[in-house]
Image (cartoon, rainbow, N blue to C red; front, side, top):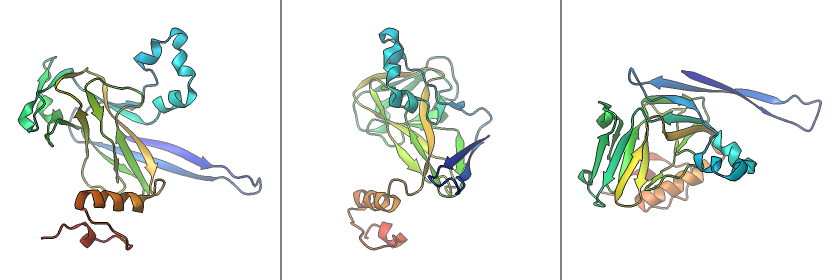
Length: 222
């Protein structure tokens, strides 16, 4: 599966041609029946509930709803968490007989974090990454989507989507409900070097002030 998008940068000089480039997002299915990957749905139930669907008049929010592509849950299922910190404190139950739930949703990280397998390996053109997050402007009671920037221009393996359960209890996902939103971001648009240095500081406690960042900067002391 491949999605092509042509982007252009305008110029104030009429004699100077606009700069155009194409962005290709390649999606390699890892199973015979991966979760559906679809353009982001602009509709939101809570926005529809406003009189005259007034919430859609907020153009920035309505535009954000349409960004990227959504990966949809292949089944209806329930997540139960007793509030404990172990993986065993989270349980999953398919509500529609879906036989492959353990291969789709599990707790890899414990501490109330649920991991979803997207079913794809994504590849972008050099200099482009993928933002992976939950669907915009679609809050979910009891769970919050975690966000990551994935370096899909070189990453040779798939990534997972994770949600943090926010309180003990039960959370339900419906079949066809988006559990992951992806959209391309250009490398460097958010200060990639600073972001990486800050991430390493939080992971290792080591503040890096010298460039370039090297492998030895990432290693924890013995």
